[in-house]
Image (cartoon, rainbow over all chains, first blue to last red; front, side, top):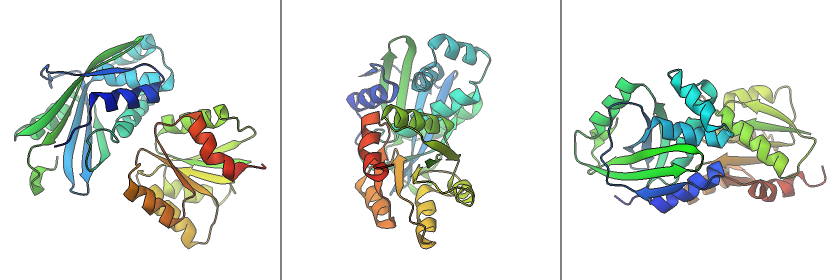
Length: 163
Length: 122
């Protein structure tokens, strides 16, 4: 499966947030259990699923930077449990815009963003119960909390692959 | 002058407004809609000079909204602002009667280049 590159992610996230976002390929295993956010994508025209998992603080940083929110305000919003609606909307938009660099073939369309811990864990488990391609990255941006993210696609595209 | 912004993301509606102002367009009143259905409703009471729309939206997508307008012979200039930038999508948009397609993320300069030919003289 042709993948989006660290360069592609860094470029689009820098353009989006106006910050110098550094993205590097990572070999760190992605911990799916807690404090994560997920974007669920349908990839057209073949219509196979793709999942982008990210540390919740990272996705919140990217959404907050998009809106011009300082890091402290983002952390405060996260400490209340779920991010507030404005931040959630911005995080959703970050995932939407990342769809254009997620893969280098097909047309991923964001179907949903999942922040609930249990549902996110189920999505991850469902996606990885069969062989997958996983493309992992470390992300940093100045003045904000960085983190890890992963793009997961099925190794074989079967009709019942959908999430 | 009124401009209709159609996007289910409140954040993106805000960013588009900011970019249009940064591009140097002043005196614009923004009418906002969350999807194609909402936008059609807004058009019963507003006559915008230009419509800017996202592609993927719940209820009614941007392309269905555009097709609906053109089928009613409503010829208001129409631009897409979307993360969908493939040739296939671009061709669909232009074939349906869009004036331009701007991909996210965009800069004020990108916005200026797309809007200037349509808003020139206003």
